[in-house]
Amino acid sequence: MLEVITTENARDMLGYIADKVIQQKPLLTEVDSAIGDGDHGIGMAGGMQKAKDKLMKQEGFDSVYKVFETAGKAMLMSMGGASGVIFGSLYLAGAKGMEIKSELTASDLAQMERKSLEAIKERGKAQPGDKTMVDALEPAVIAMENTCGEGLLEMLKAAEKAAEQGVEDSKQYVAKFGRAKSLMERAIGYQDAGATSVWLIFQGMREYVETH
Amino acid sequence: MKKIMNDADNVIEEMMEGFVSAHERYYEKHPDVNGVILKDRRKDKVALVIGGGSGHEPLFSGFVGKGLADAAACGNIFASPDPNTIYETACAVDEGKGVLFLYGNYAGDNMNFDMGEEFLNDDDIPTAHVRIWDDVASAPKERIEDRRGIAGDLFVLKVAGAACDAGLSLEEATVVTEKARDNTTSIGIATQPGQLPGLDKPIFELGEDEMEYGMGIHGEPGIERTKMRPADELTEILYKNLMEESDVSAGDEICVLVNSLGSTTLLELSIVYRRLKGLLDADGIKVYDADLNRYCTSQEMGGFSISFLKLDDELKKYYDAPCYCPYYAKEGK
Image (cartoon, rainbow over all chains, first blue to last red; front, top):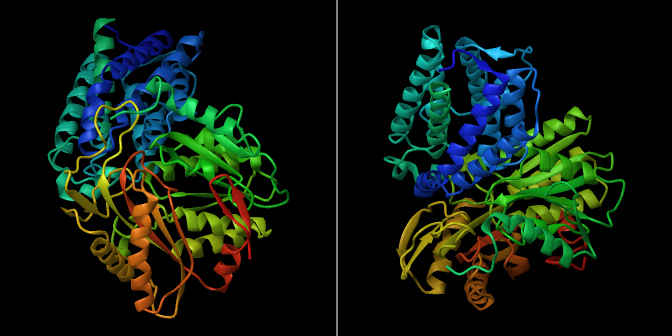
């Protein structure tokens, strides 16, 4: 079980998350097809593959933030669609411009995710309850801030749980963005695909930290 | 659904390769990104860059041409191009007079084009954008900025292309383009779904004997789903809805586009136009030009949209300017 995340861990962990999301492509496609246009799984799997390829090609990162930045940039610059900007920013925005750090503590990670969340809300103009990935990300970030004193694994467990609850909560919302917006109250009962991806990403982090 | 394709993961790459190669007399592909670039461009003018998700061909890539767009930034199927594609494509056609971006008003496009513009601005390249929101069925007038862009793109693009070609400054070209956007309204119906390459199911379900008013070009739900009706009847309903939302009234001159979403035929579009012309005549609205075509598609989706461009002297001047691309041409007047 990891106590901190080194550059090597981060590279490995983001690769692990990429594999997980790629594996869950059918689930994301199914979730998105219900109320969106069904391309979220394809987009996320493609972006995650690009992020992983880029990370695996590069060695000798001096900063953990650089690892996240590299992965985020690869997604941002290849995916397109709303999810390219948003999920690219999830890795990129919190890490960009940070001082060099060879390992991140639980609290560093929580701060990074907070910075990403704020950038995503600003860029996408989305608030919790709008049936977007923010519905899972914001509670996960709050959970991280509340539990970062309890260690990396405990914090990620809390984040995963909060994100999962966020996915569940997204079912009751009317969509404010994207193609589901036109559905109005007909979108109620369906979970948001972006929120589902956030949950998978935090689940991946927790699994990696727990088993390494 | 049968589709002529190879591996679903390669559809965009293979489409771009074939498309640009077929039109190599006019086009070249950006070496690094999915941008379609006009080879023989007029210099010393604002660069007009259009773009959006692929899958709606010939929009956007097929509207790169003289008096039209200088380049198109192309995304994956139904997904906006990424900011780097937008940036690189625009850099390739920038002539030092700035870049005007024109695209449909969708969340993904807005975010990616905004970022692309920020990258250009970092390089001191001035930019502007006009988001097209012609689909009156997609949101009420009070929330016009929530409306989506559909086939009315064509009219806005025609005017923008001519305005840039005429040598207007970035600010002036933007104002003219915004006017064209504000004078363009559209509404459509869907009769059958299309299917995205690589997905097992069509993008929506619609009964054999059903149609849906106001459905979007990505299968966004519309206003009402009903039993299929005769062409005259549904044209009357669409006309009524469109007239309520546009500022067109007796004495006005308009351009009309009846656009097929994919599988609806020219035969059917002609039958729609026949009734539409009767309705416009009866209301004293003059048709300056009409076009029945397949410009903004959604794969093999069935259905059509009607778009109006309300003209004034300024817009007429730009509408009448000559333009040419492999999928659209005006001889000029």
